[in-house]
Length: 284
Image (cartoon, rainbow, N blue to C red; front, top):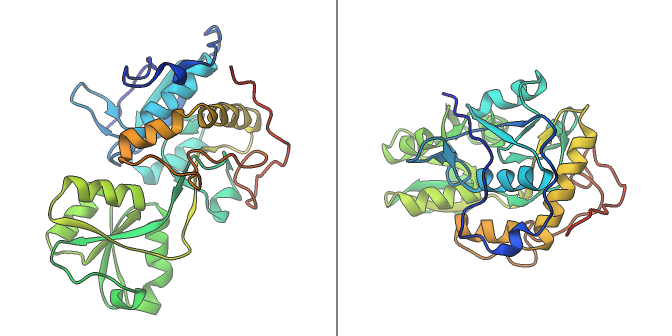
């Protein structure tokens, strides 16, 4: 199901400083981006129609500062990267984990959030204390994600059974209904699902899995990648990303969080596609 949204001013709850950057005349074609519209609180259906969430607010503001119209299309995550490579989108608004495999074929911005792999379990289930507690269990995931890849990579070692779904809510429901022992997803999504579903509990986070959540572009879109990253850097400096994070995730980011950290160059450091050219965005 596809939904298109025209870029609009960010919600009135945002402070005036979030809009300090001067808007350029809208003389360029719209920016097209895709996301998974079932991945709350990053993007999920709005009662007013279309989708809402952290990603929607973030990239509407990016487009506004660039003086561009934004068209957002909601689709299954598993099909977003193929559609990007086919030219359907200019970039993805979906939170996308920067892995080495993906960075070999895509260009990413630096992270605007950290992600780490976390399990959610049904309330009353014995807490997971180590990977060994997963042995022989069924794990639900959203298709086409690093979470699915982790289960596949560790299936033989831990005798895991993979249960993959097109949407994250379906993966959570599998746990609540007892069809899966645990759901593996990103930390922000697991915590949000737990806050909205009393039967679901955020549990064990896999050590050493903290990675950048960045924005992917095609390899031929280096100039656009750098332009979007410059805008994201300005939004980090003036506190916009942190305010959006607090609004949607409930906590003010600390100084070690990607919402406020500026990384050198363009892209995720130490990943393919990283450009060490120093950033020098014009923020006003």
